[in-house]
Length: 114
Image (cartoon, rainbow, N blue to C red; front, top):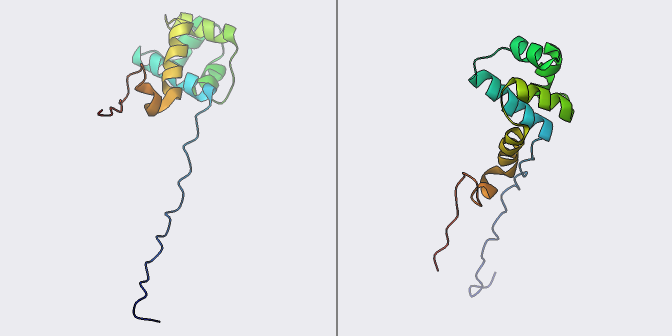
């Protein structure tokens, strides 16, 4: 190899990270319902009986295993004394993720100096 030749190593790319997948709406709605129920100190049985749904069905909804109808969510949120709109807003905030929360939400904001 000639002495006037400089070899610059080519940087090796780090293995591409898989983008985080967006959680399913049913999973997020279930998380919000469960958190509300637990925050109120209520059992699955209490909420299910008042909402006129089975304990098993409510449990499956909370774990994000089943899709719920608007009527079922209305009944459950009424039992929890929460508006369906509030449930949907809380779910939407979680679905937006940390990047978008800075745009009117409650997450971090990227500030660029001029």
